[in-house]
Length: 59
Image 1 (tube, rainbow, N blue to C red):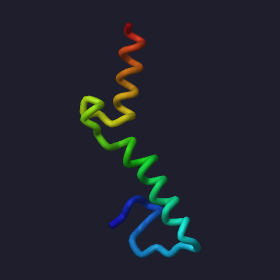
Image 2: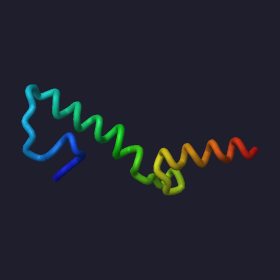
Image 3: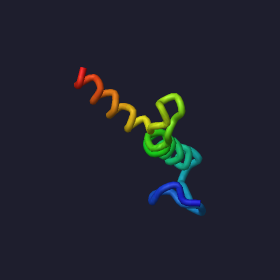
């Protein structure tokens, strides 16, 4: 399983906090920004934000 280029299965870390921090970064920075959400009209948060800005600018 590869989460991103910086974190791979079998990696070794100096402390228990290091893999937790890497996983948190992956979830918050990549996964949640790219994942489509039904509450956002099945858009990713980034796509939804861009669409909202465009709608606001057109109004």
